[in-house]
Length: 226
Image (cartoon, rainbow, N blue to C red; front, side):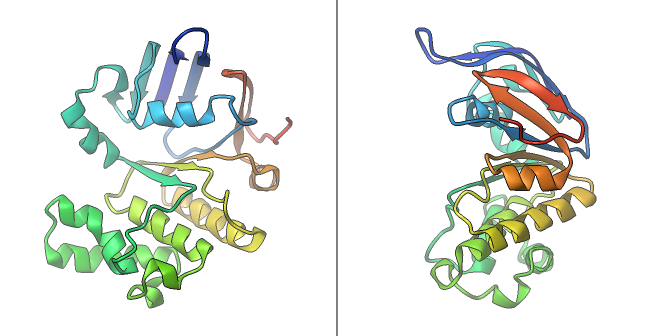
């Protein structure tokens, strides 16, 4: 599903963000990527979603060759990869329903399909009864759940969550993690990038630890050890 072989990423001079990364993630896995700030976690995400290309090495995601992908193909790749970031990036003048529907709308989906899909996704994240509210009328945890629903709009095979609970309190953090676990149970591969020790240790899932741009740990049922 996700395969990186001998991946390096340099940002000019001696700034090495990733150093000889070898990583394979199978379909259906739930994997946490941990490490302190500046260890290469966000760079790894950018490479996987083809926002950037590696300096050296090979990356394959869901059958796509990320190193040789053409720019016009990137939107099609990203329909297979849902992405959730720490900052919500919701459209403030659109309702919850309209925010989730937006991805289908711009891809040319029919109104009937949008009416069928959006309520189901909002039901998964527990917000079906709030679909007509605006982002400013919702808590941070609720906004993040809207983002998760939006990320699922094209039924992605992979969901990449980069610090999705970074701005949330412990209760909302737990709600978001439970939703990610539910999505994983549907068969979606989850890549969770986080610095939250409690979240990682309670998941008891595979943990990949980055330090200095290198993988220094890869445990099947690991803990946050740094």
